[in-house]
Length: 546
Image (cartoon, rainbow, N blue to C red; front, side, top):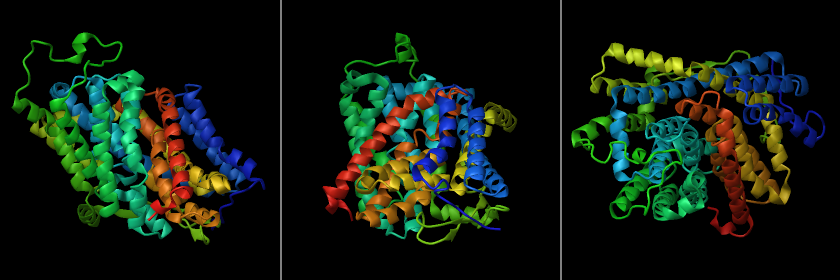
């Protein structure tokens, strides 16, 4: 049995769009305004999406149930698996007491919270994004900020804001590679075009990050650090994306950013140390003014788990390594009742196409496995017995069990929205804006990431629609397709998956609505700025398009 999606079930695009948005309104409304716990809000949103898909769009019940089950499975693996691995590594560091040395090391570079946020939330988070993606940088960065003494809400919010500009080139360029595959546009042109949009925001984000935390005055006091951090990242992001390709953009740019900031701190420090309002003076230096500094050996041992994590995650992300691991262990399972049973139709795609639905169980090559291996190796080198490691791992599982349910329900909602065609209705509403389409094109990508939790998924979802609409409007398809990815990165702040991961990493189970309210303005404002940039590139500077 096959079912063809419909995109205007009520015969009026405005009414159909309003109905299609009901699941999103239910989910975000319960989280942000009614303070409902995340797993309950996610289940309510899932129920709303299934009712709309079945009763309004005519989706068969078997397909709706299968799409929700597929999404829930994807939420547990690989997303939930990544969360477990990231928190496991953090728990090992806390149990062994080594995180205190890590805190002291970062404080020795700069005890100022603003500089620490730049190092961890932006630069180090970008490195992890380049190697792994899929929620890993938010989990790691937020956990590290908590360990350094940041308040939970700020740790979560700053990790989410920092994890924006690198996202389009995350996981060794996967979003751009997927965009090229879906649209048929040249990979080099798409990489170059995104590389002519995001560097501006790579320069802005460090300033924005510090402003969100410390206000305008606090940001002005550390503008040299913001400038060096963002400019070094932006320059390398532009050069690598335009003259090499999408694969190692984040890796090279993040290393340049970290080194540039560290060098700057050798010659410059903020005039005054900034701390959160409720911190005591002694909190600026955890060791105390007369305490002995950790030795070089203690510093090396304390940072060893994070070095191992970085190397392991990067190696796991290499295509050659992935290919070997996948050959040894990966297998695909066509989702029963769903695989190629749903047909996408014009104008969302150029011609009718059956939607594939396979669950890939690549347990060995998964990023979560790399994190677990890093944790086990680190724990053994830190002197923990296998039995102690098992107890820590069990404690990690108990901490995140309810959050795993939340992630599963969130992804079930996203998959049901996708396979039911609700997302395409929302996309067509953006595409109907005519002359202003270049402005709304990035906002469509923003919506796609907010719905799916992934820039890659958003590109797969809306890449073809962007290309078709651009041709109708008379602008470059490369520009519109790239805008989908560039605008999408700003939606990473508010997608349910990232919000839940940030909440888990900072111990804020039940506080997801507060986190969402903290970052929503930043997400929307930055997405609007991307829209204005693309609008200018479409009509004022068309020569910038490859």
